Length: 414
Image (tube, rainbow, N blue to C red; front, top):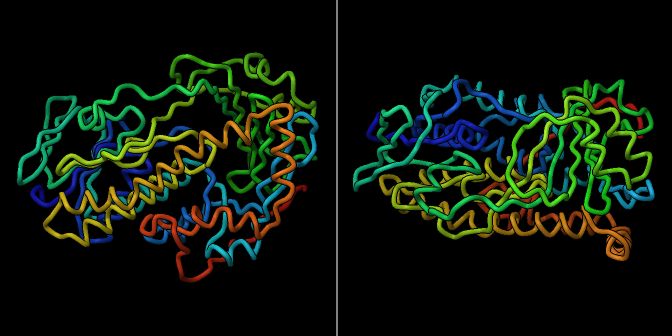
């Protein structure tokens, strides 16, 4: 097995999804995670229809649907006036158009779905406390060098080791990620503490000058995920640093009282300074390829980070299966399927932050006027390229198949 298995650096969502995708094609893999145990940090993830297309391709569609909360709409609010700018309905016409629902899920619940499927599959091996520092390769395979001095051998190596990827460091050597200057603070609010008039069954964005607030229900409506972001020109990367409620509120004193009220109910705040990279075309080096944030780290504004990693996994497994015994051709085909789609996500995520999430004055007024002019059909046409793909089409067209119904979801307000 060591001669044919594929090595995967990183046991996050992208790494596990890759292992599952390969296993579905009969290809064994070894997932090597640097942490002492497998798990995910964070709270909520938004899942567009393209995520569910990928779940189905990975064989975990039903399990993922059972863990998700199905929201009614995407709601955009003006954080200065406190009024709604527009919303996108996510009901039956949306599901018919794209073949799957839009939902939100706790990151840990999604990770658990993937992990349980990997643990149950004899073609997937999982190894913890195994940071991949680099690799050596020859015409017959790749040797991964681990931090503990050991090595692992396989037919190929997939760098799914995140924003600070060691595999990318060797493959590209393009330095540190780009610091965006945007600081995100995360909290989770018990539903009973969420202001009653804001307990909407929606993914809600309050957009204001150099700041925004996002909230939506999670875990069967037990809690609300709360993410607030302030463009404060933070100079250095930070991840998961505990901060006080006073520090969080300092960036939102200029927004409407209704929006401030949400933040005041948060507790246990942690801080991240957002980073991304410019798109690149070089994802491969012989039998080595990058995947997920190691290949195309993006800002959060498209809510597509996990979705893109799972699409990568689907595409990679497809290409390995389509080119048996020719790993370099398979990896280059995978790159060709994914580079332009993910580059678009990276660049448009930055643009959305500037033109939708954080504008002020006349810029914000123009945003409001344009977005209010859109009909539901206009919105659906605008996101067809994104939600119609599963990793194999590049987002150029819809994925056919059964429309999956969402279970009934309780509505508390809105």
